[in-house]
Length: 90
Image 1 (cartoon, helix red, strand yellow):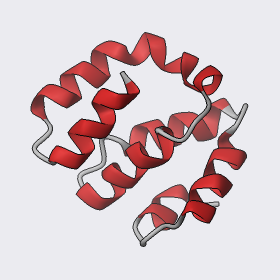
Image 2 (tube, helix red, strand yellow):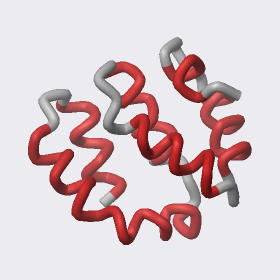
Image 3 (cartoon, one colour):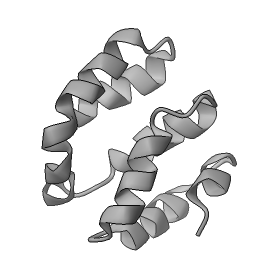
């Protein structure tokens, strides 16, 4: 699945569940989704944050060492919805 093309469209809860299922336990796909948080396209970055907010708590443990990057992004992010979702991840 090409995450970037999937997130460039409107996504539903079924899509979110599909993405979280496919990335569960797959560090490469999780990293790809994480990288999309910083995409230049606001829609893709917002939807990546939206999907990541639907991970189970134990799936988000790998974000602990990325907290500084997330804090920096939340400080400079102009998109209020994405900023809110990033703060929720923190």
